[in-house]
Length: 434
Ligand code: AMP
Ligand code: GLY
Picture 1 (cartoon, rainbow, N blue to C red):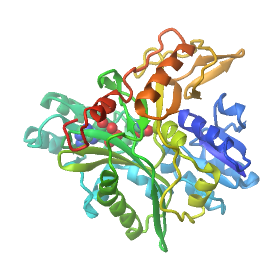
Picture 2 (spheres, rainbow, N blue to C red; picture 1 turned 180 degrees about the vertical axis):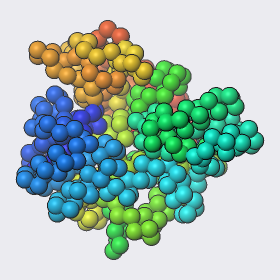
Picture 3 (tube, helix red, strand yellow; picture 1 turned 90 degrees about the horizontal axis):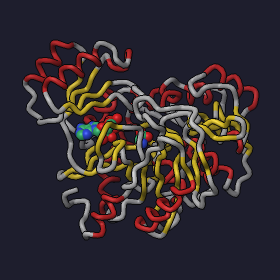
């Protein structure tokens, strides 16, 4: 199968490895890929958001399947251009990707289909926003969200009125260009956050989906969930204390109305939806939709998935997903992010990485090969991934594997999965205080 993979990060390196490990023989092309992905296939000189370049190449080379990783390419309409050529694409078209590309669009959608979510109001004028903030009754922190794509930096949890006002002003002044000219002010939700990925295949004639196991990311840079937000410092899954009935509740409260809503609104879907969920004392509430796989969640999910990935994604891309569940490996998977010095503000690039012979899977997220050596080339540099019988042993294995990789200034969290492990070991459920 000739596959074009769009993207260059850890998520895409993990997808590339899983594609090549499948029973289906794969010839891999990547746009733009990375030096690590280049060891598995051919990298093309097109950035992920270079619609013209990628579409031109695809018209000539006709891949059997294109998999689009990053949201910017989806929101910009890359899937639409490729489908117009009659090609099979795993990735939503621009209209459906607005569920991630516009938070107010997503919120209106949630309300129309009675999907539980935080109260919010969308604002585009400073005076109006100031009035709302000064009479805010939903409690603190006030959650301010830039409406459009802001590379994971468009959400601020303001703990004071002053901070909320200053953030609102910065956003409306164009901190993220047009992406922050509309701002969502949202009530805070407290509880346990989880990432729910669902493969979806929806058009006018059918509405099918398959849920992947809920997993958990760790957004803050420091242990104990302290410090600034990042793209994610590590993930694990499945969540050991989530029971079958909890998954059923996630399905009924969030997934089923989403899929019905997509069909009702004529929003075709052929790809993955990643639901950011907060499990509160009132049950699961939807924080946001993403129209793509999470990073580093993908590094976890692909270790758990016991399927021929090219065939599974092709089924979705061709609109013939026809199964209620996917086959999974037993046990638990974990992915710990090794980040550069200075991440998330100003990651230091070009630092040589010492890599021994790790017993674990090394996923490259932001590296470059220079004179035969790997050097840092991004904020999140490497993901160390493993799979074991349970969360405790997965954590131990990844801790041992840490010894084989090092560079000056490397940062990582030693507590990925620890809070969930303690919660499970204490016999608590998702309904107990997190
Ligand atoms: P988002 O980009 O919407 O996922 O927001 C980024 C992060 O902000 C989420 O992963 C949550 O940790 C946090 N967040 C978003 N919305 C809320 C909310 N209403 N209450 C509390 N935390 C939130
Ligand atoms: N790990 C969170 C995300 O991919 O948005």
